[in-house]
Image (cartoon, rainbow, N blue to C red; front, side, top):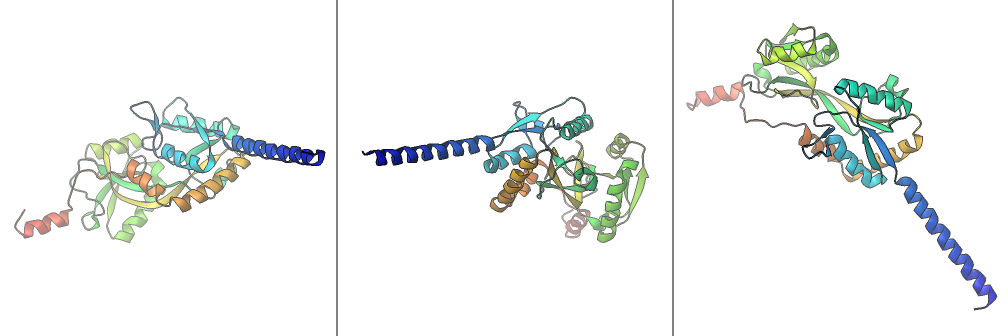
Length: 278
């Protein structure tokens, strides 16, 4: 091999090595560990019986990692659910965590955090009754007239949504007012009221849902300094929505949709009785 060919070989070899190093560096930079806030919320983010991270958000993030090469560090804090969320929000504002899920989006919050273009789930206002109730069937509007709804002052927005829902479906209701949310739940459970309003993804034990309405999307929120992270997240969410359009529905049905025991409505029972089978 003459000097000219030898020089050309060295140059080509150097170029190949340079490209390989560049690709390796790019993969390494994309293979980030994302610090995700992890409040304990039933169905959303919790620790299962085997001690593993579980829930809607966890399964969604696992799927998302196929498009980002991200690994996750789930960050937990002490306190009840509200305290955990408040603490994690403060940590997100300070950049102590990178991302927090199940976040509403409005002008005020957009001044504090970065939001992607796409949501990763939808929550509804749920009309809930006692789990063992046989009087109130799902969307049985014909027999809902006069249903007593237990409320407290913090439910004003949900009550406005419910009022529109009642007018749209042609049934009447009565309001029973209480001072605290715990009193509201207790009133329904002991029979003082028929139903109350909750978030469908956070229904308290002992209740079941008979109606869902007023959908609202929820998002991952990012620390405001994570602009590069936001760009990666936007691309990944877009591509995943196109490749797996039914993921949110599948996860919702797995974690939040309770089929419960088989029940029939009052009108169906009356019809069966008319046929002589009741």
